[in-house]
Length: 137
Image (cartoon, rainbow, N blue to C red; front, side, top):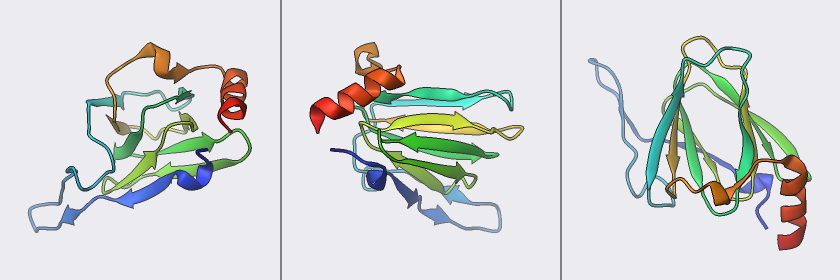
């Protein structure tokens, strides 16, 4: 069963140069094949994004600009991780509830996903999420 301890903050390789930094995410950087890429931006500071879990999908979240908090829950424990560096990504495996909040002005959140969009993979109600976790444990 997936727990909070399975969530990982990973460093994305960075090439430093006097002209600026370059970070690259390739197949060996993350443990899944990237099947979908999207990003969140122009997010009002008080907004909360996410508010769901996935049955099968894995994600990597990167704060390309600005900062935001990721609230993670596994049905028992909770952890909050602040993302604020574009060369660090938060690897969230399937079966973890996530909420994104406290966006700074100009925040951009890049999301790399292991699957294409499938509404059936989402658990959007926290009570249903807890039932799902109890069934698979």
